[in-house]
Length: 223
Image (cartoon, rainbow, N blue to C red; front, side):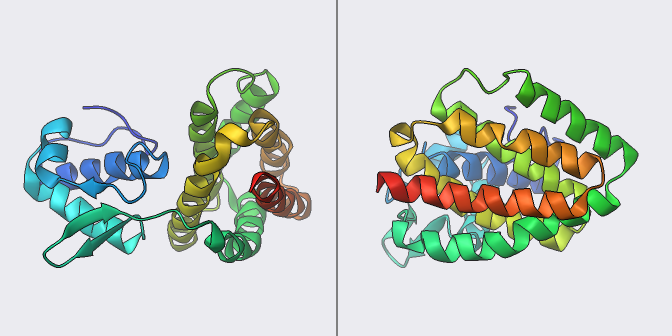
């Protein structure tokens, strides 16, 4: 089985297959490998993923709740259109919640998690994002955000932030080839991760807010 942004999932049960299908399809929808507006064939997806149709259908039900797919009676299921006009609404929510997660992570992250945050910051500072396609960089960006959400140790906050980060990333992927400084945008995370790892909640919150607002500005400049 292939891995996803959430890591490898256990095999052996129908539930784990549905979970695996959910994460793999979600990645494809976020990164626009399944294009906005594209019809989704559950049989074809099941064959591609090497699993049954039932787990794929369960995954599609969850993805509809995430606003990544939409189903119409007698027409089928489609990838949702990426609506640039939603950028302001998505950014408004992230501007409130991303700093909250960063501050909380700085306060409650475990020693092991702080070590992982520092390792990721060092990788970024060591030019880990200097090369790679824009889409590879966006995958890295998502992994960094998910690391911060996990460090915050609030599963409800994590769930909401992942959902809105997914929507923001879809918008970014729509214009990413027009944005000249994707690597610089991701490099901003290094200081943020260091502040979280060091327990500086106030500075971590400030940097998280700056990151969200700079993302919105970068997208708007190329629209």
